[in-house]
Image (tube, rainbow, N blue to C red; front, top):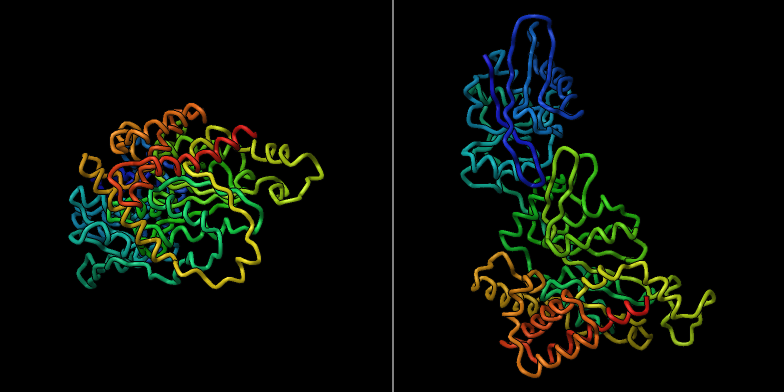
Length: 512
């Protein structure tokens, strides 16, 4: 007789059904595992054997054959331990075989029979609910699985013995409850920043439309402080975005205690990060920083110090909103709709723009051009706002804190985002809630330029040599500025401000 237990394999954030088949037969005693398993899955034989012995179950002196079907799909991870162990227990009669018929099972086993947490429980729970199955998962992952559905039958045991007792009817496990991450400390507030009013305005515009922002200025001018305060003015995640973000973090094993939060992700990797760390990869094709920043912010400080190849790998995800990681035997796609915010010094020494400063190596202009040339033109073209952040003067620092903080700015950003979400929902694009994510064909219709604005854009596009991408990004930025003003139509003043942010990008490209 063959005993079957359902589990999952992960391709990106998609959970694919896997059938764990166990057969006991005569012949030489052995524990054989087949089905294109990687090393972690292959090692489950020893963990299962030790966990069963620790639970008081001795394996019979028979040949135990385990097949993970479909056999041509790669199997990775340690979450196959528990389904294999339960299938073996059902095959030897330790638990009723029919008790597992309508459950999907995930979990890693410790040598003492305890069940350890694994990654990917949330997408597995969503897929199990869609199949009409319940879910058996580790105790620590129960609060995460409970978010999938209120009707999902969830068993979250701490050990094999506890699960066996539940099936025998001698112990009843309570259904876990969804966990919400505590708010903790409030994010940094814009009120902490003195001066830099033009930079604060650019930060508000970037937040209102989800636009990419590049800040250039000398050390200590407040670029990192401004970026760190961007999350405080962004609207919270809506339910659809929350599910997408949580599924990515679940696959990456980044949901501590299964706790979910509606705060947008803010990822700030060090400039030594590799291309695989940024876009994802490795032997198991794990999600990278661009996917962990999905529906949030990816902040790259010391922008030119990143590897050129790693920076250029961001170009495709910025446009498509997803990243595809291809391997010889499989292909994984992760979502990556993020807002890119970068900060950089004008040159290697950082003071080329200071009044009266003269670089000792070369003229200031050449020093700036050589340093900024590390950023490719196509990547620079993907920034909607490029601003200079000058050094803060002593007169600014001795002033009292500004009266307007993050709460006031966040209210204006939320109002602009609400306008955008309604606009795109009315034209059949409910998945778009920010101007930056709108397709080029759509933004031309929703911008609604007046006569003077059309003339200004045509003349500016010719003089500034805007690419087709740059042309549409100016339209998106102008549409956001109009939304902040509550204007139905994009006017000349909105286009002029949008082009002023774009002009910095053009000048840096020409200098490099």
